Amino acid sequence: MPDPADAIVANATSLADAVRALGHTCALIPSVVDTSVTSVESTRSVALLVNPIESHGIGLLWKLADRMPEVSFEVRESWPLSDEAVLDIERHARKRANVDFRRRSAPGPEVYGRARLLLVPHLIDNRPRVVIEAQSNAIPVLASDQPGLAEAVGDGGLILPPDDADSWAKAIRSLWPGGAEYDELSRAAQQHSRREDLQPSTAVAAFEAVLRRVASDEF
Image 1 (cartoon, rainbow, N blue to C red):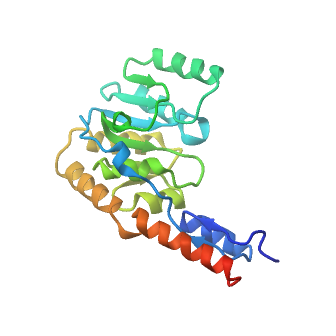
Image 2 (cartoon, rainbow, N blue to C red):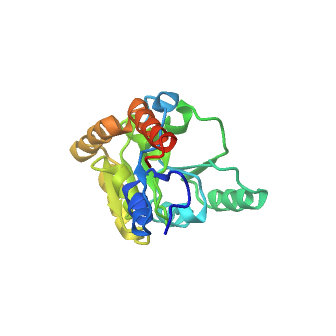
Image 3 (cartoon, rainbow, N blue to C red):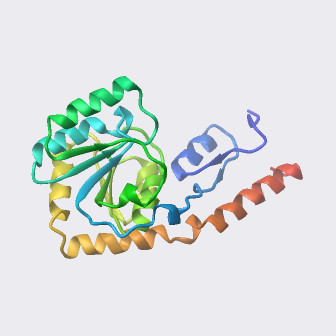
């Protein structure tokens, strides 16, 4: 089967492997993320979920908030939500004194300014930019057991079953007081975000190489 395009690029190994399994050539290049835009010294007071939609696990967050009234949760709009979706999230948040819903704003340090943990309980396999943004601020990430997420998180967080609220609650509680385990994950998160393959210059060079092969009809 011929390739459907002059070049195909994926930002996660699992996605690239899926394309290759179909018989197509695929280059692996992690997304370019400018972490300087979201750099901050966090107060580390909330468990943060960005983009509160069903495929990103907002249903699990409501369960966690109910189980752990002692933990403060912050829900941030990312993709623009419909009026109906906003009303639904506001309704859920009002029922829970430990949940703060914040509307969409331009990327900036305030996004991670209160985060102790980033929660990524996605029901789909992807590699969102929020992982490296949080980790660059030494914020550990708790993510679903999806190949792309596991690759993105590395040893800078924990990988958990997306449908097991008990496991998520246990993990959050183990890290909430701070201590040695949290400090170790925090250091690992920041170190993981500084890997060479995630540097913008590395990604740009790899993409330029793809373009050169296309231009020379070698791809």
